[in-house]
Length: 341
Ligand code: NDP
Ligand code: MG
Ligand code: MG
Image 1: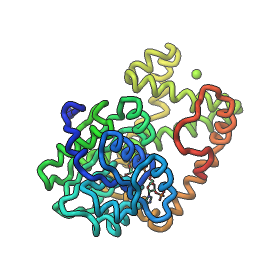
Image 2: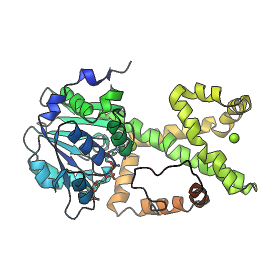
Image 3: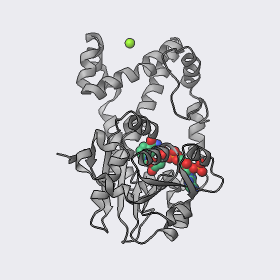
Image 4: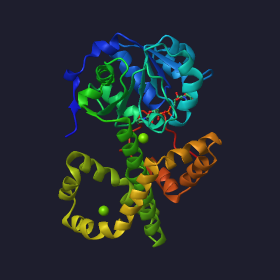
């Protein structure tokens, strides 16, 4: 059974007594910075020169410095820039300025697991990874709740790394929901697998194929959009609340029977074999190598795939249809429709 911990298992004063530098003010960076600050922690946001994020952090009353300056004064450095840039930032700005005995915190294990960042032995290396997007991490905290976190210690130089990790997890609100003990390897490999095989990759492809099959058969795209994309949220909400069983309990008997007889026809055993191949490429580092090589070349493959995805007909249908949805409120994120292309 996994080890779980909650607010009562952590001592907030450990992190509250340290100077914390948060590098990056994006999805996770803004949420960690603001939640830490509101928990009484001394936070400085570290950003590159001319960073568009600077104004946003300052507007919230946070101290902002260059990455080097923020790191120099810090007991704890939180690395929340995009994974593909972290090793450059670490080598050029963090490592040369990192105080002796300062702790490093990550929000995902990618760079440590695949060896792109190799901290010296004297530093605690922790991970506190919220299992939700940054905007939710902030919104839940403000509402007096939290997004669950998974927590790991890769290097325990101080002998207190676990206590510090739990204290940090408490300060961002994660232990209001609960924390689960893991390792950098387990978090990295399962996170990548989940997003590739099921949550992002698998779900996106499933929805696109469903839309293509219906519209190619002559059905209206707007109706197809509802059936294969819009309703997905309602189904997923039921699964989160009560597992697949609750989803099956809630839908009609017709839908439930269709689930049993047609689900395995669509997602055949071959798909499971494909998933195993995806997992193998994560475990052996092939995915990480391909991602980083493309990023280092200026991300030509990534950019092309992103543009191609944005051009799928389901996006244009959805854009028009959502304008008419009175029940979808403006969210608090910075996302702009069509901005990914
Ligand atoms: P974002 O893409 O949202 O981070 C963007 C931020 O990083 C911006 O403030 C940007 O500043 C800054 N940044 C980019 N390049 C540099 C640089 N060279 N030097 C300094 N700052 C830079 O990242 P995420 O929040 O998505 O991810 C951060 C970490 O959290 C990753 O490890 C990710 O895997 C993990 N994570 C993310 C989740 C999510 O919800 N997105 C969920 C759980 C974990 P600028 O304005 O200058 O561009
Ligand atoms: Mg991830
Ligand atoms: Mg239906």
